Image (tube, rainbow, N blue to C red; front, side, top):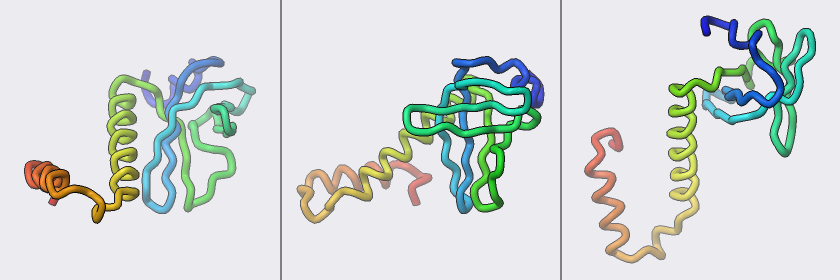
Length: 121
């Protein structure tokens, strides 16, 4: 659907993507529409719920440092979401890894993977 027409078509149990920007870093989360009011879309998951304006999909009372808005769960957006999730999980695993404890063979494999990818450097 064009522009924000998809917001008007939302109903409870639909899946949306929350696009959060905090300090210039993008975070995406999939959430379910819990309920709708005349002016708001309430989405959430097991741990929390958030309120968004029906008019534009922006979070109610978000500030300039933490912008959040809804994205339609299209195939293209879902692909980006999945790739970002894989990248995030890999980065967390790498940060938590104690490279001093890895074998030389493991370090060589990691080095080769990085050298093979032209975007890595």
